[in-house]
Amino acid sequence: MKLSGVQAAYLREQPLGTAANKVGLALGLVQRTQAELAAAAGVTASDLSDIRNGKYRRLALTTAQRISAVFGVCTDDIFPRLTTTRGARRSASKHVSKSKRSPKAEAA
Image (spheres, rainbow, N blue to C red):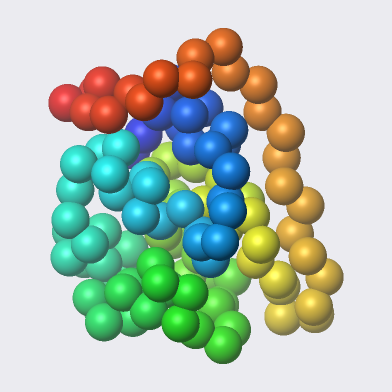
């Protein structure tokens, strides 16, 4: 379910907007279901739905890392607003890409 290099670059350059994270965008890029991601990341489908929709009070860093690992990207790429348990915002990595078109299912 890993994102290709082009897909990962596309994910990084997309603005977060009002979304809590980029889980939905990443799922769309790899054309997989929420249930498939939940199973691969070791979380329940219900918990993943809450995570995807930003309905969690505190997200464990290990859970965010497992979800990001399934896509093969850094935690900051999927969860740019993630706050660690100490309250310090994790810094977002800066990435540069030449392509702005959607690379859906490129790796399929």
